[in-house]
Every structure is written in structure tokens, then in C-alpha cells.
Picture 1 (cartoon, rainbow, N blue to C red):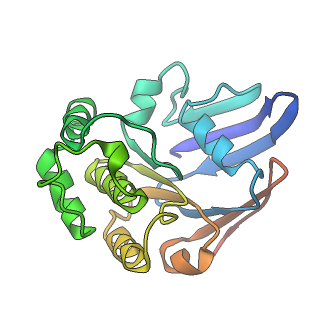
Picture 2: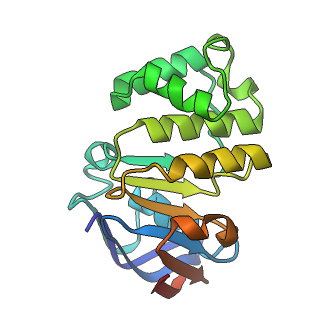
Length: 213
């Protein structure tokens, strides 16, 4: 298995956001995770990535603790957040950081960006935060797909993309190595039905449905 969460609970300011969540992600799983806003979807994902300390329970990713061994855990995971981070670096500086921190070739990122109809080479001095929402999302997707990962996590990855951008994105996903697992937090199951083999539904901080499809 790639990741496991056992009886995980998490509260924010006295409100329980995760309520004894149990979740296992195996190699080759293609998961659609759904549920209303506030159901705990993003929270469990961020706990798996080591962004949050949990109140109780246990989380392991490739056998490692995402808090204590965060660098090791993140080495083989790509994550696309719903909202692009407020990065103040230029595109060139961001690519240099990614090259050094994740061992990703800049040329590979250029290639994936071009396939998303995003021309980076003529915008290297432009600040990331000045890109449009769609361009930011395309760049983050290109970086994620350029990285050698065994788990790809997408939190509403097409939220800022136009229809053509969505089509390109889903086309690229059909080329992902079958051994790589993917987890989509989404409200658009109809768009990814052909890309997933498992459906998880969360509500009120619990996994209420988990089935193969």
C-alpha cells in the first residue's frame, strides 16, 4: 500500500473536521473523492501530506510518518492544490527552485507546459502571482506531471481551467503510468469517470462510501 490512515481525528477550534477516518490507498488506485464542502476531503489529504498534525490516529505514507519524515514522504508525491499558492517568485526562479528541490528537468516542465498550451519560455521573468488563474493551474499541473511520482493528488485541478484546458488535462492523465496512483478531490465525477476505478464519498468528517467502480 502507498498510504494508510487509521482512526484519524482532527479538530479546528473545537469543531471536529475528521471523525475516525480510515483510508487506504494502494498502488494503481485511481480514486475520485467526493462530498460537500466541509466534509473533510482536503483536510485528510493535507494530513497525508504532513501539512496538518492530527489529534489522534495514525497516518503512514510508504511506511513513513508524514510529519517526522516529511521530506521523504513528499519525494514521490505530486500535489495540485485547489487554489494556487501566493508565490512571489518569478517563473524562472520558481522553475529553478523546483529543479533543485524535486530533481525535475526544466525542459520536461517546458514540454508538459506546451502540451497544456502554456508558453513558459517567453515569460520567465514574469512573477508567478501575476499569471491568470488558468495559467497558474496549468504551470502547477505541468510541474506535477513532470515529477516521477507514485501518487498524484489533485484538489479540484480544473477549477480555473477553460473547457479546452480541461480537455488537454484529462488527455494527459490517460498517459500516466498505470502503476501510479491518483486521487482526485472533485465535484465533477462525470469528467473523470473513465480515469478512476474507485469512488470515495465523505460527509461530516467521515468516509461514508468507498467502493470500486
